[in-house]
Length: 104
Image (tube, rainbow, N blue to C red; front, side):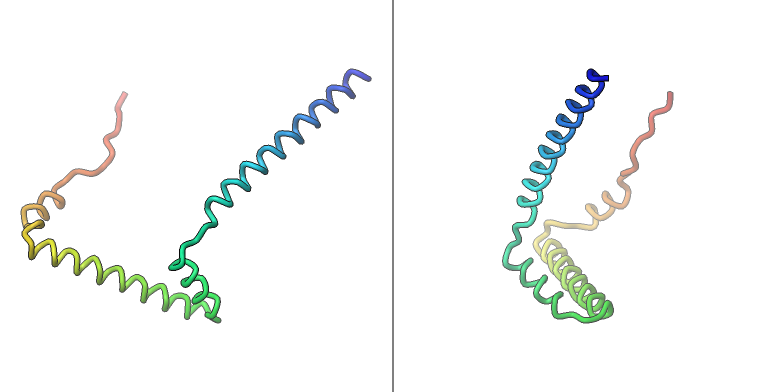
């Protein structure tokens, strides 16, 4: 019985030490990921003023439209400078992107 008690105590001590080590690792990773730049902080401040889900959805749509417009402007620039062409479009449309399956 004494040996079992010692084994249980040793196990509990190792388990607790592992938990503390894991907690430190998680907190370290969380600290690394919580650094926000000024633009991200601005969006968070903006979201903090919103009162309804509809307002958040409207903002999401505005942001989505903004990025769609930027993508369109960039594609127009590529076409105008000759960096993009109908041939490149066709190549992308005909490209096979599915993952090949291994058959045994």
